[in-house]
Each structure stands twice: as C-alpha cells, then as structure tokens.
Image 1: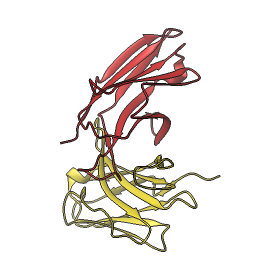
Image 2 (image 1 turned 120 degrees about the vertical axis):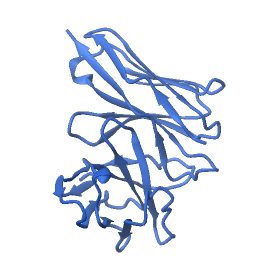
Image 3 (image 1 turned 180 degrees about the vertical axis):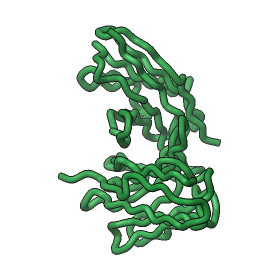
Length: 114
Length: 117
C-alpha cells in the first residue's frame, strides 16, 4: 500500500538551515510535494519535484529526492520565524491507487527560536 | 485571482444532525478534491471530481458521507447523522488538470472546522 512518513517535530535556531525528511513507499509515484500549513490556515503548496529529478532548488528551498531509498527532504536555508509551521510531504498516488489523490504524511512541526 | 474558498469556516453541530460543507474551486480548474484532517493527523483523501466523469469515492469513510459537484464548479460535501468522530477540518482542493501530467498541482482552501458535540 501507499504510505508516507515524517518525523513529527523539528526545532531550529533562527538563521540556521532546517532539513525536514520524508519517506514514502510507492515507487511508482510520479510527483512528490511539500506543503506548508500555518496555524488556522489551509495548505500552501511550496514546491514539488518530478520523480526523474534528484534535486530542485527554489530560492531558500532545496528539495532532494533519493528514489532508490524512497527518501525526500526539504531544506530551508536561513530559517526565519515566519517559517514556523507544519510541513507536509505528499506523494501523488501511483497506478494502483489512482493518480488523482495525494497521500500525505502526518506533518512535521517546525519551530524556529531566536 | 481568487483562490479556493470554503464555507462555513467553522461549524458546530449536534450529534445526529446533517451538515453541508461548500467549496468554490479556482475558476477554470477542472478537478476538485475533498480531504479530511483530524487533529494531529495528516490529510485523508475523501473524494475526487473530474469534469463529467464519475467521481472517485474510494476515500469516503461511510455511506453517511456524500458529495456532489454542480455544473462542474461548486461542490458540496454532506455528512448525514453526524458522529463525534466526524469532528475534523474538511479541506477542499482544486487543480487545473488531472492525471499524471504537469499542471495537476492541488491548491487548497482554508478548510471548514467541523465540531460535533
């Protein structure tokens, strides 16, 4: 079956880099996503990566994909207090589950302290 | 342009009552999705609509849950005879396309927080 796992909590100092990790099980996933959820808000799409890529950079965000190990990470450079939120990793369902739904991890709560 | 909107933002209902949750997708988006987020949990897929195709209802947890999408735009999620375990945030998302190709990123609304007492 399809499953996505994340560590639940990460605490970093302002200005440091944050690395949020995610593992998934569906090797046929075509796209993997990172969403950000701030308190009381919906999910904001941060970035996504296609499965034939191993890295994607977008300003302070770097996504690394290790397809062999089914491991995805999100690195946030120069972490700011405004980055404090819950970060969700998600994979697009593969052929067995249909391409139409996203499978989400439980989310990693990032706390940024001075 | 306007994003995905949902109403109401909060709903408190008594156990056993029916509720309707509404979603207005981004204009021009052909695909619409409903998810449920229980406290401290990730998102759970409920149902998906794409154009005039039959919806994918594989995530609906029971037959008390139903959804429709009128005119290929607005969608309503209905929960009949609500139970306390239905308490959650219900999130709607839309995307411009569907399937494996590009353009199928899902954009989420702010959600409806449902509390069943």
